[in-house]
Image (cartoon, rainbow, N blue to C red):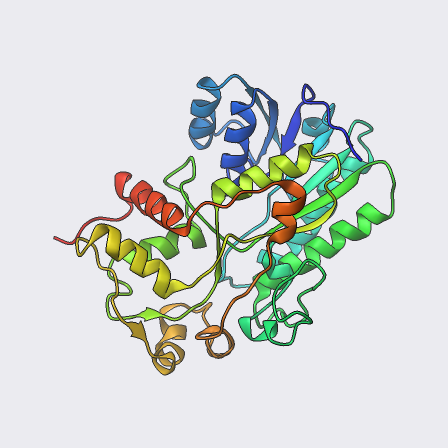
Length: 355
């Protein structure tokens, strides 16, 4: 049982990121003091959205220079903090060097943050943003799992540098975190393992897989047909709330799957089309798997034929009951997530109606 003093500052790493921004917003709205770890506090243009929410909230924010690859760089921002929320990790599917661009920053960055925690006497708990990707590599893996669904007891064993390197990076980073946590007894570790995060962030100009995927639903990319990728979807606001709950729930422990809905691209596209009609380039039909297999790698180098074979048309099933039971997470309807996110992108000019 770990009690966190709500008056102590809270360190959030990767503070300008998609999820971190919403976590910080929720912390500031509750009146907390946030130590925001960023690569360069002097680049104030990157901090404007955080500053705006801080100005409108009862909490306060302070910036600290830190980087995943620089040992000791989180020490200053961590000083005096009882709770550390570590979100910083690269998320992209197309990289030139998976080891250098994904695995090393994820694993070394986690080790960097947790090593600093070992050296900071005030730290009592670390909440780590892991991923469902640390539990499975492909949908085809799920059928061979003990309960034929994702649970916190399972680890990803199918990903490699050549196949799903992002998933490998999340698996190795979380394993490194547990290794470091179990070697000491002063602070405890709680992990949040989200599926595909969607929903409106605080910065409409961010790039990344969440934003680019939703843009492609409406910009005509999928007009000829929607690939039958079946995925878990969770609202960024729910994931952020889970991090805060994990920090301040004394009994919280272990891993927590955060996945609101076992869904997929066809259902997601249908929700948008039914709400917004034909003003955008939404696809109406499902693209045959053989076509996705044939043209997918040409459209997206990160979308290999092995990935298509092991995921398209195969159900994603995850059990989120622990997050509900032990953290008290409440999940938004998928319709709310999709509509709010798409409208957020439209309002900020990221997606435009058909001319």
